[in-house]
Image 1: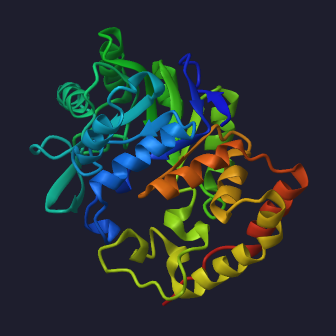
Image 2 (image 1 turned 180 degrees about the vertical axis):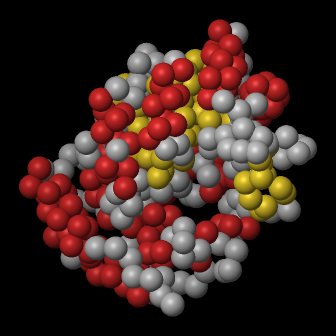
Length: 336
């Protein structure tokens, strides 16, 4: 497993990190995860050399954090724990974000809600310090909190020893720049995959220039880039993968194009003796500006397979060939 610096935090994190969005469950995933298998998957990731685990209170409203806490008992020193703040359900503080799983979710980066959230996360995770504490989504009107106020509150938590480093997630280039100017951030987390390359225009170059770590999520496009989601799969209306705006590549016409592209890479998977998942993750981790790739795993087998991508080195010519192929694929077609 290769490691890279997590910005200027002084932490060295595995280039493949375990993302635990699916671990929290919820209707948007179609089927509920098995908590016991989730624990086995987390422990298998650690056994395979992963030391970066990313979660959030919003992943099952404490469920994901609590499962991680159980899985890492006795192994805390092997883990860089990353969690988040800023999605609020207790009351009407914050600005409306979305209604899901019977909850009204608001964005709140107010100092008063942050001090409540940090204590909950520490309790669920069963630790006294979180290594990387990230804002989950930026604050927006009408209940808008200036970035300077949020950062001041987070830096105070750092001074108190409750967090080691501060990061951001899902911010615009302008918001990223202001967060950096307000001081203290070491990382940026955002969606990036070979099918969703928009961050290459601005976010990735900015992070590279300022030596910020980058944590990419959905880099396997919710399983599509594993090659295991066939044309026969049907998704329920509440699932993320049935939302064309969020996951346009799952539309059957687009899915067929992706599956054909993946099939054309069999000579590469044969050459490197790897799976499609490992090929895609290794390609993603090799892109300019990308430092860490987060990937979920429901099962021990999935987690182990994904972790092994952290040792895979692709030749420059093959990296270029894969990029050429995905560029030639073009954009997903819209279905009226």
